[in-house]
Length: 106
Image: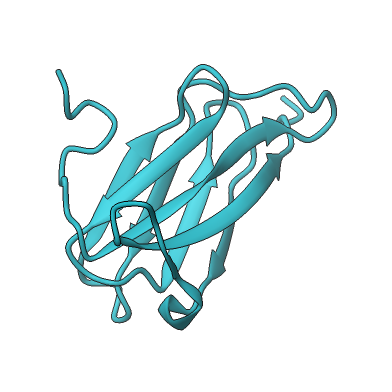
């Protein structure tokens, strides 16, 4: 489907970045990135693409996020929507940069 990576198609805020393996620096396809609003009530998520890139769109500003993949650790943090920069389509965009996750020791 055309909205596979962003079912919400919201335009209030966007988070972008790339998810990679901490040890190999290889991109992780099929990882999950989830973002929440200020009070943890509303969330939106997406799946990372072949190159590990992601874009999460929401109908509210994002304040919190978590990223992980199957058999990997999770990383999370808070982010200030005030740091968003207008994207080419004027959607306030928060670039999380390159996120590195570590394989679990099983």
